[in-house]
Image (tube, rainbow over all chains, first blue to last red; front, side, top):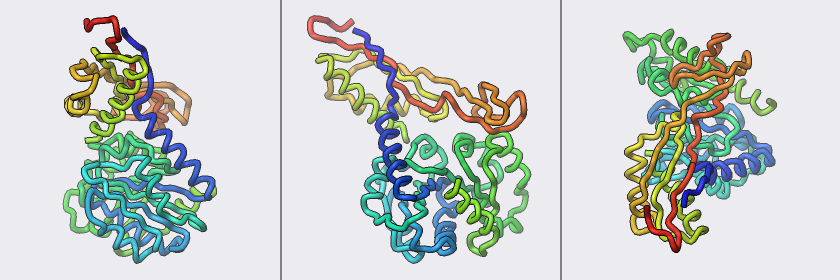
Length: 215
Length: 120
């Protein structure tokens, strides 16, 4: 007996994601899913972003396979941090975010950053219930990553080119190549060049985040 | 390896359907995979086979059918088929594409063996 099902395999995840989004919207929280390769500077960006937005208004869920190191680092920026250890999981899923939300007091919180597991493939396919998706790519990763991982950049609402303070020591890095690739994959997302270490370029990124709350 | 997440959800769905129909076996499973899910078919198959072992779906044939990407240009409204690394609209040139197909993974159909039937 053949049965036509036609039902999304992602349905269970997507239903939980929709509920997360509803819950966050009702609480007046803008949720931002932060994605990139490992080592692109997601944690440092958040460490420098949160104090500028007011720490009591920010919460973070941070996903890693192992350790609580990111949560410890972020703990100096805001007390509202929950580490999610995925074990072998190479991306966060909506139910993990639900569990994370249950552990946070969201009263007064206006921004929730969900720092995804460092990975340029798997996180792109899973809705977590976020309102915006931002993708980081550091200049030290080379100028070919946008072209190599187009699916991740295509879903981005904003792209951050990070560690730009190191451009001077990267011989052969062609910034125009990155912009050329972005123009073919996602010309809607604004691109912010930042160096979290020095604070360079953070203002336009913060202004964009603030604008998303009223959008 | 998000294939394991997908396979887990797929097998949950499959076993639920098999139980609803009181199936004694599963002969085939067809899954449409949007190419943007970047599913590696062999990884999905490997995970699927590991997960159905010792269930009613053991030995089921998994068919994976790729679903191409389709998009709608937010700038000019044109519907088009982007390349996986090129979302520029063929009419206006902007890469402001809303993906309308190619992102989902869908359980299309299942072949069940029910009481009174024998496996084909």
